[in-house]
Length: 325
Image 1 (cartoon, rainbow, N blue to C red):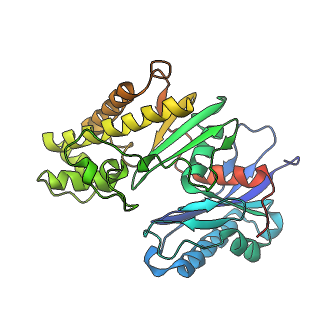
Image 2 (cartoon, rainbow, N blue to C red):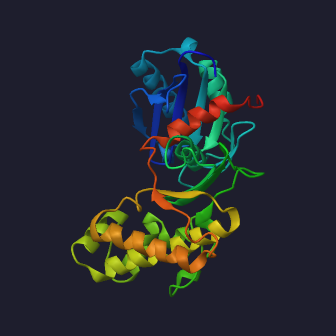
């Protein structure tokens, strides 16, 4: 990075909302600073063109809020849902949550609009990079981020580099097979396969499981509220989900052996008896699955803040020159 403030436009493009902000890197500062964040709902059902238009609009708003324009930007970093070809800034695969999203070349669209060097990263990968550089992984050589919310994703970061994989699909911890709860191996996952962790232990999966157990629930928040109000069945559902998630994390510890694991997402943020039960069950599941050599790996709540993906995307945009395409 050059001396003086370096300004990067960062965009976090998810299935429900799009956030954008100018991220300012000051030489000697412990962490970059975020200017005011602009946000808008993602028009996910309206197709890729509508999502791109909304993304460009919220990016323009973020520039205006920061008092910036194209001339002040060093680069643009984008965190996007879907599997990303980081060399080209291209979405290669995505779930139906974003209609028509595969094939979208985010890098070329933003580069054409703003004239700035642009890099694109999967949103959970970006969150993991932000957490590794400026949160729980700061001053550690490696971090595994696990995001448990609408889906279950992961990111492994070592020595400041996020492992994206040969096809951009690394870290899909929600798409490992799971067992141990009656019927879980037959549940259909969002990817279309059966028996994946995400189909049971994600936010929608937990709500669906409680409904199957006889108590209708539309969201994880409803499940948590019921558990905190004394529903044994709701609490047991959260505990089962936490335990299976912990087992999956333990499996990952055996494979990549990170210095620390950071947990984020809506499910992980539940409070009261619901949150305590889920976290205790997650730690129990880790102990059941992890080898002794990695069983004491610290597992902590993510600490880089709600906009860690923006920080990660901005950092990624400055790390190397992407292939133009």
